[in-house]
Figure 1 (cartoon, one colour):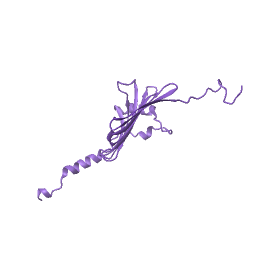
Figure 2: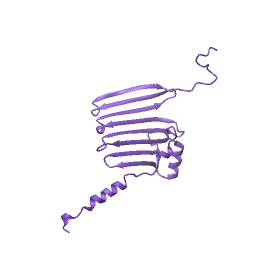
Figure 3: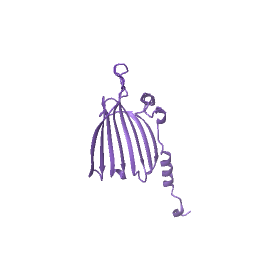
Figure 4: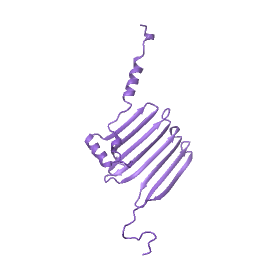
Length: 177
């Protein structure tokens, strides 16, 4: 057969390799979710230790169209000892839109900080939100950038954290005693 009529084998091999690596995962995170949607950090830590790996990761990838990544690992040098749960998604032609969330916890499973980000058009329009729980408040800082930061700004607010009332110390509302 003349060489110009032969099928190219390299693109076919590349396609097979891409499709077989599209879902490289070492963990199924659905098993570590509680009924309320929160993470079962105790289970994640135990599974991480049992795996012997540096991180647990679940990834679904359709090249240049869709990416979904969830990762659990120990925090790095920039944070107190603890753990990090990251979940990110990108989709659209050439991953046009993206969003992610990073949650940081200390060794006692207390939330330290949460970062969430989203962007459209590879970041031409984007928003970043940082939430930090405080004893009575939750500090929320939202940064919006349009046209790579030419327009936008930062808004910081404090939301109260509703605490349960002491049962016998304080009278109920409407109680005249």
